[in-house]
Length: 142
Ligand SMILES: CC(C)(COP(=O)(O)OP(=O)(O)OC[C@H]1O[C@@H](n2cnc3c(N)ncnc32)[C@H](O)[C@@H]1OP(=O)(O)O)[C@@H](O)C(=O)NCCC(=O)NCCS
Image 1: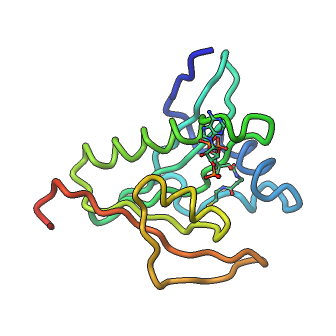
Image 2: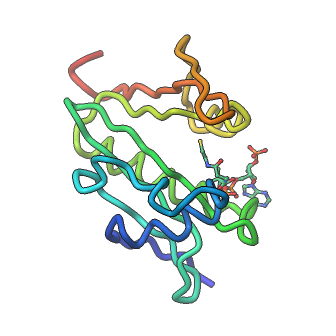
């Protein structure tokens, strides 16, 4: 059971995004307006896609969005593998910062990856978020 990470289309992310994040909303709710500008990755176990994440690189900053692992596969380390992969992709592209709108209940999880809480918080559809970010040390911006 060797996890494999594959670059996928935004359409391929929709099912896992929907089931995992917003099952009570219409599927179009989990689309991102600029999905066509993002890079999308799926983690596969035995040819079954179980986790997705989307990376948007704008103005030398990378934002990851819609990170989701199917419920039956959560807590087994697959999300960690996927998140580390996209962090390394961002770092390789000389991005100086990676950030996300973190669900508050996930902030301890992201802290394990060196992401730091900012002062920017907001609530959307009853869920509280905080912006978290990680600055890469090996860039000219530091
Ligand atoms: C956030 C999310 C994508 C993480 O994916 P995941 O595949 O469960 O991630 P991991 O298994 O690597 O880590 C999850 C937890 O299991 C722990 N873990 C990691 N490897 C583990 C292993 N081998 N065995 C047991 N636990 C493990 C992690 O430390 C982490 O613990 P924490 O939540 O207390 O920090 C997933 O929880 C999810 O889809 N949640 C719902 C959607 C969501 O909230 N998305 C994020 C929006 S900001």
